[in-house]
Amino acid sequence: SIGRGIYKSVDGAKTWTFMGLPDVGQIATIRVNPINPDEVFVAASGNPFAYSKDRGVYRTRDGGRTWKKVFFLNERLGAADVEYHPSNPAVLYATMWHGLRQPWSIISGGKEGGIYKSVDGGDSWTKLGGGLPTGLFGRANVGVSAAAPDTLYALIEAKPGQGLYRSNDAGATWTLVNGDGKLVTRPFYYTTLGVDPSNAERVFVGNEGWFESLDGGKTFATR
Image (tube, rainbow, N blue to C red):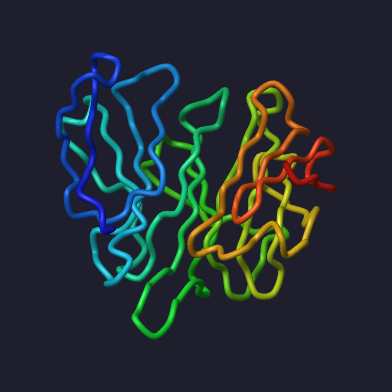
């Protein structure tokens, strides 16, 4: 499946209207500003079978009538996730991923990939470091809870250094809290990460299995 754009419903999903972005390929994430529903961010990972300049992060501020590509690195890197800071929608996080599916191989990861942060509503982006993997950086997903807005989690495909990372300072520094390979199974397809909005220590990971942690990712139980 390549993807054919964005649709919107204003009647509880009874009817839908096409709102554009037909050529951005697969869309990994859609995030709506929690205080302004006319502002929406889209993480477009792109056509999985071909590189394209249409990959990247898109933003609308008029409810989807018009879109602007606000973050693009190159035609090899798509956006695998985008997340709002729970208490400050001017702050966003995006993960950039070099992914390509070929009949004879899967390419997932590159030196240019990583987690990026914007503090101006998506107008500019800065790559985060401070303990994140520095080698081959693959697909990643960011999780954040309203219970502790500056606490971030990132589930990262990387070589070396794959696993679940945590930051307690809004992304300035990171620590690998769990490198168990079961959390990053088939990352080209699965990097599902969620954090309980009322408890920042309760973390969920989904791939070929479904896992729950009650201690901030240090240990996980199968659910």
